[in-house]
Picture 1 (spheres, helix red, strand yellow):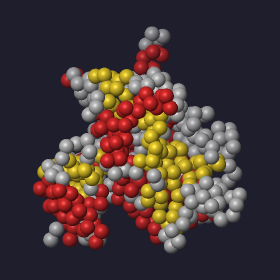
Picture 2 (tube, one colour):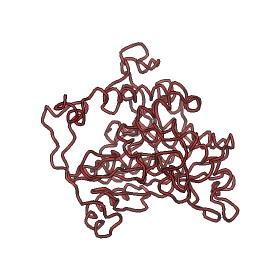
Picture 3 (cartoon, helix red, strand yellow):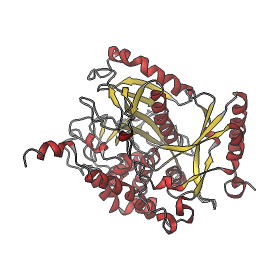
Picture 4 (spheres, helix red, strand yellow):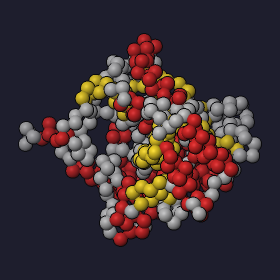
Length: 478
C-alpha cells in the first residue's frame, strides 16, 4: 500500500487534481517538478524531481531532512539534532532523519519563468503517518478546522508592500560567504516620496510588468499593482481567498517575485526596513472576514444602517485586540520588523481600532449592505510566515467570539489613545508570547516553545554582534 492509502486517503477532488497534474506534465512536456513546503519562517524549501518521478511522489511522498525544522533565519541549526529525539523528542528527527513531503495536487502549477518546470506545494509528515507537529501549514489547517466547527470559514485579502532594487554586485568573494552571507549591493530604481504618482509608476512599470505577467501566468489572483511611498517600493494586492489559499498564495508570491527579479538582474526584498538611505518600511496589511457556512453571507456585515460591524464582527475584533501583544511575534517575526512601529508613521504602535483610519492596528471597512465588510490588520510585516500570521488571527478572533469580548470605542487619535502598546522589539514580543496562556493552549506548549527557541537564538546572535552604531558611539569617545 502507498503512504496515502495507509495514512491520508485522497478525496475525489484530490484524485482529480492529481490526474490533472500528471496530464499537464505530459501535455506540456515538463522535464522537472519542484516539490516544496513552507518552513517555520514561511520560506519555501524542497527538492526538484524528474517529471517521471512525480506519480510516485504524489502517492508516497518525497523524503527530506528533518533538520530543516531546526534552522533559524541564518540557516543555523539551533536544536541538538544529534541527541536522542533530535532535540524535539521525535525519533524521526534524531540524527537529522528523513520526513516526507506529501504534495498537495490542488496546488500544481507550471512555472512561467523556469523552462519546462512544474511546481507543487507539500505538507510534511512523519514516517508513521502523523503530520510533523512543527509544520506551519498544518498548524493553520487545524485553526481553520476549529473555526469551521464554529460554523465559519476564514476569508483573507493580501496587501503586500516590498522593494525591488537593481543588483549592482552579488558579492560572491569567498570571504563574503557565511551564515548569512554578505547581501548584494543594490541601487534604487526610482526616487521616492511620490506616493501613487502615475509618472513615478510609469518609471518603474517596465520592471513591474515583468513581475506582473509571471504572477498572472502563475494563476495568482492579482488585483492591483501600485507605486508605494518610498524609493523602489511597490505594492501588490490580491483578491480575497478562503481557507488555505491566501496563505499558500503569499508563500508562492514572495518566492516567485524573488526568483523572477533575480533572473533579470534585480533584487526583490520583503524585509520590512532595509538599511538603505531614504527607503521606507514595508508592511503587510491583512484584510479578513468570516463567511457563515450555512448562509454563505459575510458574518461581519451588520444588518442595521449606521453600524460598522455585526455583533460577531465586534467580538472577533475584540479578540484580535485582546491578544495583540502575544500574537505580535506571528505578525512581525523578525528583529527588523519592529523598526516599523513608530508614531505617526502609517503603522500602529498600540492595540486600537478605528473606522477607515490608517493609524490604528485594526482598520474597520464596510458597513450595512457592504458584502466586503472586513477588518484590516495593519500590524504585519511582509516577511511574516502567513500560516502562523493567519492562524493567530483565526484563533484570537475565535476566542473573542467564544467569550463575547467587546473592542471598546474607536480611536480617532490612534497615537494618543490609552491602550496597550504593541511590543517595541522582537525580544519584547517573544516575552509576551512566552507568558501567554491562551496561545499555549491554542497552539500547544510544544509548538510555542519550539518557535521561542528559534527566536531566542536569533535574538542572541543579534545581541552578540557589535553594530555600526556602537562603533560610532563609543570607539572614539572612550
